[in-house]
Amino acid sequence: MEQVNDSSRFSVSQDELFHNAEEDINKGKPRMKYYNEDGTRMFVSKNLEIERRRRDKLHSRLCTLRSIMLKESIIQDAITYVKKLQDEVNSLTQELQALEAKENLERKIDEVSGAEEMKKWGIQEEIRVEKTDGTKLWIKMIIEKKRGRFNKLMEIMNDLCIEMTDISFTTIKGAYMITTCLKNMGGEPFDVDQAKYWLQDIIKMI
Image (cartoon, rainbow, N blue to C red; front, side, top):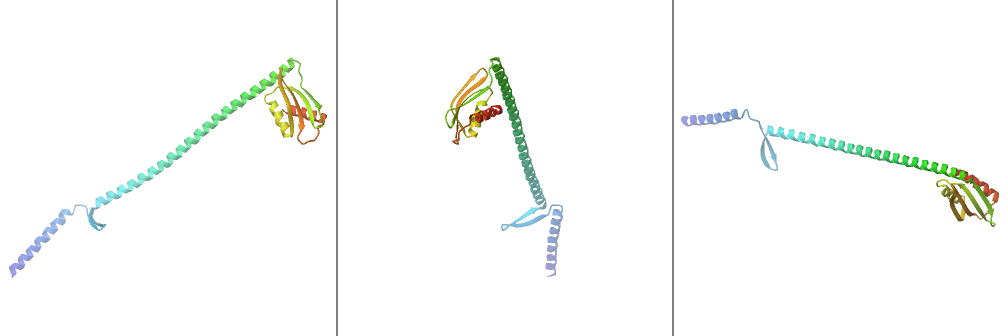
């Protein structure tokens, strides 16, 4: 019996020896962590877990960087687009100013040439007003030729509720000769002298 007990003690000592030897071998290796996911058992190295966290952190930083770069790109595109619009506005403004300057120059040339031509031929501005019936006047005007002058006359007459009929319009020697009949759309009769007076004022305005 004593021999059996000695053998058993010797056997246990061997198991302990092997266990201690295995611990010594694994002592320098990374620890293993136990996880239970979806009912399965896994042993994951601590270094692998650290690496996974490091990659997740790096991925998060990359996503943040992409988001910042995207916002900066959108802002830069908006700035570029606004600058392009400003350049177009400036270009169109310059073109408009050039056209206005050209039109003003042409208008002045027309006015000078019209006045000079009238003077050359001894033509003077004239307004004649005659009464035809109770509500109508016949008028004849010789006025200096200016760009857009006749259209302005028509607009003013329309604003005053005065109808122009039987219009004759010709250009002679730097002047416009206009004959027409005027009718008060309000039905009231015209006074010849008053009509001639306000026609002279209108011609001065245009």
